[in-house]
Image (cartoon, helix red, strand yellow):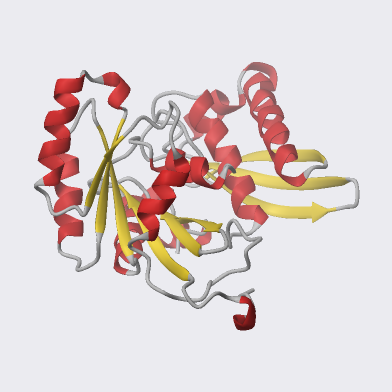
Length: 301
């Protein structure tokens, strides 16, 4: 809930900030680093983030509501259209935008399309050139200079997997925040329910554990979440598109899904601080990524 206005400094700043870029450039890593909590799931595979994930940073002077958006992708399925819609809605609602790119690969066609999309907006924009540990100094300088010609107020070269001065980043971000009272309680790090994070954790483990098309053809829906004093009991469905994918996910004698369940339980436990009992059921919904009704049923609204 919002903070009482009587306790808010007159010069307090608060605003919404979209983190955008092509898949797998470090958007979720940046958000988790700033919040010092795992809000967004991460894997080396593109399209891991499918929906807008909201993370909230608050200190005595400011509140930044970060919107971690799906990576910009060309549409092949109705799901991709939904992902693009989340991205567009986020940037349209933002007070400023953080664009992240990969120093090892910039500029790509996808980078150019994302920049073209955000340049239409009359809000401040910051560029982060990530993964500079993968390039030499000369190439880093060239890319930084190129980004400086693209209508960004700030260009910040860094490596998110190495030591990052988070306080300095937050100070830079603060310059572009409007003066507002906070939108959320200072104790909130997200406004999303625990069910959402449980689904995302299970989906992350699928992305990390399986190859080829299976992670992209899967989604997770928590059907029951029962919170008891000393334990949490969860039942979740893993939805796939084809019958042939089911034995791959389950594995011989259920070995694969048992490992998936155990890895998911372990991480959920770190969030809820209780013993976790997780039941996973595998179901088939043919071509769910292409069907609006299926996407709505699975929470992609």
